[in-house]
Image (tube, rainbow, N blue to C red; front, side, top):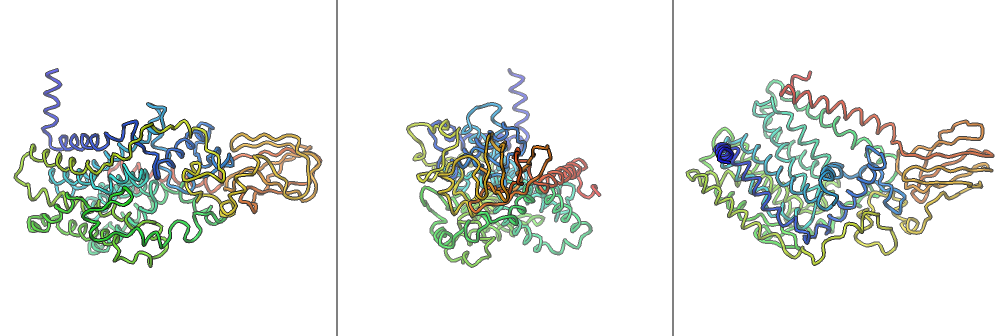
Length: 570
């Protein structure tokens, strides 16, 4: 026992090991209330993520390696989250199914890991810039305890946005490496960007803009040998590794009108305007239980950095002031004085102006950690631990007890998909606001509510002697199929379904599938005396190509990591 104690003590003598230990313990302390069975995470976005996990897991059990269509959703007509919504948060929480049967516990464990990794990668990034352990650990703690970060954790249950906090420091570590002659680790840009795109594509768009501005502000270094080449290679790796997501997404965009692509569907100017903050909200704010102020540690840290700006090392002074500029711009973009509603539509997809507080938290946590570290330069380890404890104590008060419930959430009620009816409320049977339906189906939801789960003859005539539907597979036998007979299948229209018709002479026809006026699968049958129809979901050829491209991209990225130098891959 004494040997173990001495070994632990020796390990903690290393400042980095002690810092990781502090971040780990801080993350546990922050997330501890989350694991009460009476802490309700089914609020707001939470119920959608719980249902999505259940649907994705059940689809995997059906034998679909890439669970694009969740067959049990939308009255068993099939609904697709994973074609349109960044897929990482649908898969990774399911890893914890190894140790628990509860989807809620899986989600809570994933939320804890997200907080922990956010702190660790922030620490690594700030340490790379400053080589200052105090500044790095303070920035990490301020980052994970920032009010908006805790709002995502406890109030909004915004799993995708919460996860995106992990990748911001990784991306900017890659950018910093590229422009500071540390090209051996420039692949961090690829890793971070891939993770962010597959987590929260709207946040990824804004991050790309900040990265572009960062590149412009360092334009002189673009002339250095190999810099542009490294950036291009990173972009190529990012595009290829994420192709399994964006290629099917684009294919659906061009194939039919889905509600998510309808102009103005995913944002509204009046919502943007109503989500603007007052200047006073930066000091204290509480809107519908959500907190958007900057927090005392960030405000204090900014003030200290400005006062002691002459103590910032010249080697990273420019970088710090670029981040201060980015942080201030992010804050301004949350305020009423900023005309967000006149921006291009792709930027308004952020939906709520206060979402820019994520970027403010990221950039200003770096600034604050460094500012406080300069001020307490002469303090020892115990003093640092005390300051961190005080920071955590002040922010933990932000965790609202009103989200506890008398009875634990009964996830058993959602193990079988909730039926869509005219009474279906905010839960929307795990389909959010049905934004991933074809526009025709969305406009006629009553049809989904009342339609029978079987083949319907839309034109012509035939006799159905047998039909069996199991998930995304359907088999039907027909006789006396008349000329120009058109049927509608009990599946909502998504690309990738395959229709195979076998006639009485065993001749096989691959039938063309189209979209019906109701937003379901529609196909025309050949006139035959007898025939068998087999429907299955196999994905499109473009999807299959995109998987191959992704595999090649991943192999390319692995090669970069193996050689620790992105330039050695060519």
